[in-house]
Image (cartoon, rainbow, N blue to C red):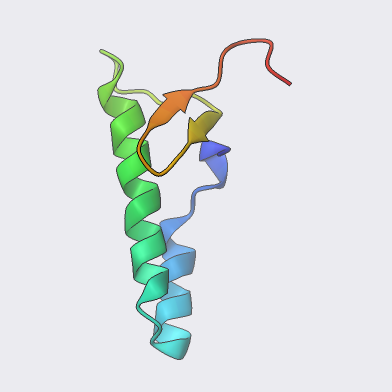
Length: 65
């Protein structure tokens, strides 16, 4: 996941457009992953890139292509 691309407002707009609650679920899952990343560092900052799975979120190691 490229964290700078996370834009929760888009999912709210999609939900308002078609009333499909899956958009809200996607938004909440994405934000939960961001919070998880933030909680892993004393500063609360998040990395630019992260590996995301169903059960975990972790920063991408440096020099990963």
